[in-house]
Image (cartoon, rainbow, N blue to C red; front, side, top):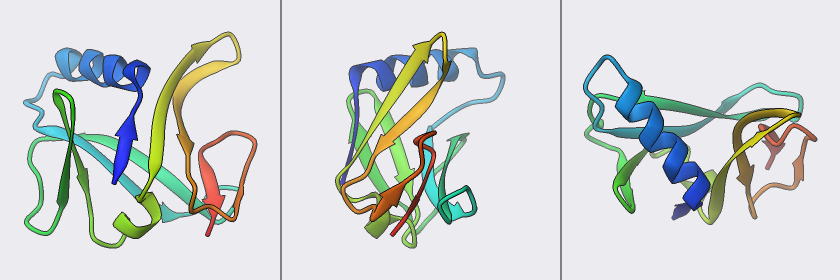
Length: 107
């Protein structure tokens, strides 16, 4: 379904270790918004929901809701830490168009 690069895995592991609350995994979803119409949302979660797809990416479990799953199929998630800023970047083969920030797209 989706892939986390080694850099993304390292960042997520760091965020999980730094969390004050117990973390079961990382939720990645697609919501309306952003400069291209759809945007990615990333959050640490204490538990999966009953209808989530659970993708095991090494030591990290990724939770994906049913509405987001088709738009995240084949996506590669990277984490970049640079002078221009840091954060998750998404390479989405399903996107008809992506914005320059790498955080929003259109289907």
